[in-house]
Image (cartoon, rainbow, N blue to C red):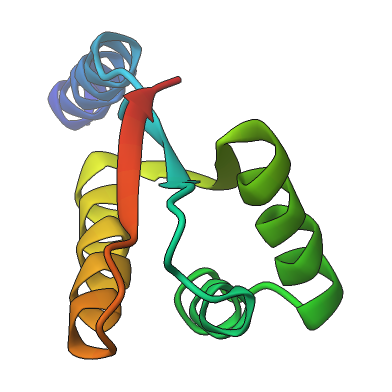
Length: 106
């Protein structure tokens, strides 16, 4: 009986140590960058669809892109940030726009 209790205790201790060693994944910010050709309407649609923003949020981000040169779209783990940035750029190419995104570590 004591042996099984010691085994459980060691297991819990090991799990606690392991959890203390694991770090949260790094987070990355996705920005859409301004250009002189991509339409306001495209920005609204792509921000709404890729980043799941409301039309009001998409409009505010599009305004930020236009006035500040880039717009904050969200913070994600690297793989998700990269996927979203590629989705924006791919859809932009398909519609004839040169839209680019940037990813920065938070």
